[in-house]
Image (cartoon, rainbow, N blue to C red):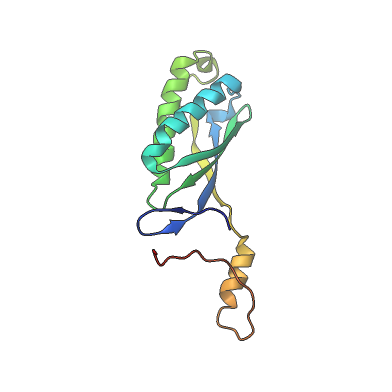
Length: 147
């Protein structure tokens, strides 16, 4: 079983895949701009109980895999990140303004997917067969007794 995260009252493993696209899908990312965007993410994320796992970019979007906690306010974090990174990236890389002439750096929308753990169908089947005689399927469950 994967190493679980935990706090005083729970055990969890929450992975997310986030895709953020530039406004008008303008091709503004190169390695330097992406690296700086990643640094900003790593600076802001601990305040929201978020830990960066993977980061990569294409010319007009970034892919991010991160872990979160049950208390993480993910939409607030994403908005804070997009706001701070937009301001800082445009300030530090003036060439961006030639492609994005208005205030927004990011598209207003984003794609957020849960990731990790067992596939949905495996979990669905496990739950559906609970209590059935002869059910020999097993999903490892962490010890929640606190001892």
